[in-house]
Image 1 (cartoon, rainbow, N blue to C red):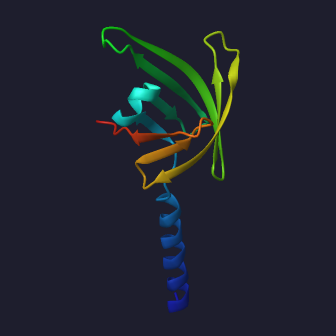
Image 2: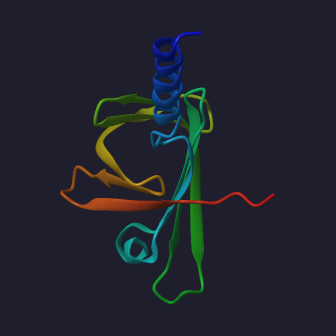
Image 3: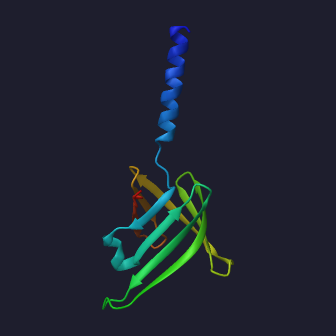
Length: 128
């Protein structure tokens, strides 16, 4: 093989490696402690097939009572928008939320909420 051919193959492999390393929303995320006071603890999961889940755990100010609401979701990513469809336990649509989002590195997901707040989520590491 000619040196030019080898160079093209190396460039192609490097380009493919760069594509694979691009951060993605796929994974399981949870809010950091600074968000708990105003939003509760938010956990979101995004699967590669476009399905997922969302749960919000709120704790009363006394700390003695907590409630968790969990929903199945589907999602779609369009440029800088995350479109999240929520489904009620009955299977009916619970509505659609559109968030502007950005990733900070591979482990921080920031959602811009309609209330002019942001929600910062950290990627949960899976332990073998």
